[in-house]
Image (cartoon, rainbow, N blue to C red; front, side, top):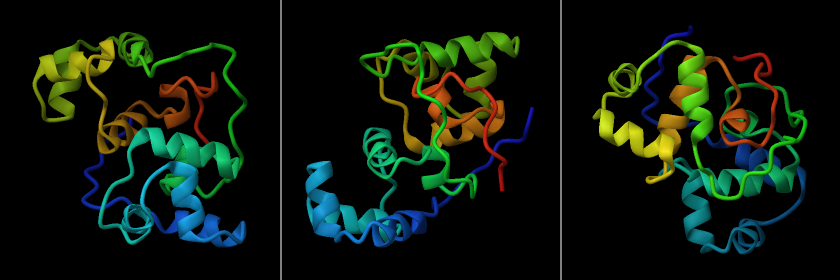
Length: 161
C-alpha cells in the first residue's frame, strides 16, 4: 500500500484550466453547481476545499475523472461508468476496500487520525466524508476516487503523479 499524504491545500488549478478550455465563466459554473460565483471562485483560488458532491458534478460536466480535477493524475480520461447503481453516496465501498486489505476500522481511523466511530460513520454513510479524507484513502488504497464513490468499477487508477 502507498503512504498517506497530508495535503494542506488541494491544488484546484485544474478547475480553472477546465473552465477556460470549455470557455465558460465562473458565474456559469457556479450556476451549474447551484452556488454563488464567489463560492466557486474560492475553489479555484484554493481558499476552500471543494466538497465531493460538487466534484462529482464537475467531473460529469467536464467529462474527466475526479482524480484529474484534484491533480492526482494528469490523465483526463474519465473511467468507465459503474454498472452498480448507487443513489446516496453510501460508502460501503470503503468497507469493501478496507476488508480486501485485511484492515480493521481502527486501523484506518489511525491512518486518518480520527476516532474509529467517526470513520465508521463514513462507511455506513451516516456522515459525509470530507474531500481530504477521501483523497488520502484513494492514495493509501491506490484506487481512483471515482471507484470509492461508485462512479466506476475500475480499481486501478490512472497513472498517479
